[in-house]
Image 1: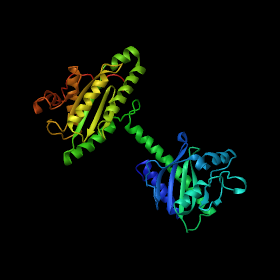
Image 2 (image 1 turned 60 degrees about the vertical axis):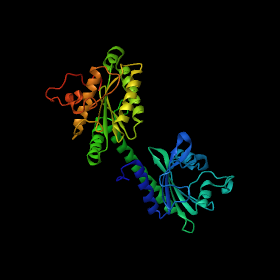
Image 3 (image 1 turned 90 degrees about the horizontal axis):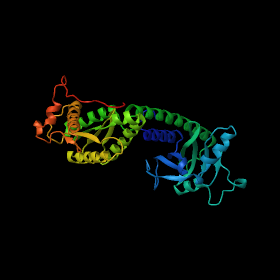
Length: 374
């Protein structure tokens, strides 16, 4: 689990390791979604039957069909006990803790859900171990054996309990790593990507551009009027404007498959498109400008675009593309343009935007940077 790159890979690694450790033919890990009252299968490994997929999109079961996780476990914990695994067989046999099954072990009407599922899928027995995370039932580890294989015994159920605890520890570590990644690459106010996320994605995109000509487009946006909102209505209202525009940028960015939207800092945002033609990116940016002008707060947005799909000359680095997009945005702001300004579309290499971007860094044009709160 520690070597996995994503939460899904971590869960898959845990299920496969448990299957092998318990000599099972099949294993699954399910999440208890309390708000929906269901166990949702995250991963299936081993010998799959009809209807089972390695990473199912929507394989789930009502908790009332398998009530152990919702009822019995809490009753046992309330009495000071610990969650333990139990064994079920296709014939309805049971070893270890289980929910109330009726007088003298007689199954309730309709039969026992797990036994019926075992028979339907040609399996003889299974061991079910609760996964407890942060003191709450998180889900379950399920390992089964094919019909004709030895039935799981009590010792193996105890071992499954240990494996479920190890899985829970791995899930907790995965959560911590995911949170660290989120904080490292996410703007805390808007929930968009941050400058670090853009830099990494842009470097990767330019590698693809140099390798096979993949079109890379960068849209840089400057939210107009934030300082006025902060000065007259307060920073809390200014933050709401930033969040509102961030949501609008995310909505428009979704029109471009695989686009990254981010807040660079203060009142500056960007959209990075990799693959779509430059004209498509310009169309989306134009829609963004139109919608931003309709926001109740603020004064619209100044938008600049630089795309390798336009005649902007060599783009050897991310810095070059940023300078071009930033220069286009500067011209849009200076002209109070209601539409985006696109580098290279007004005279190719002689475009005023390109000449502006080529201004010596020692003598940059006068402009306001990162107005408002960072």
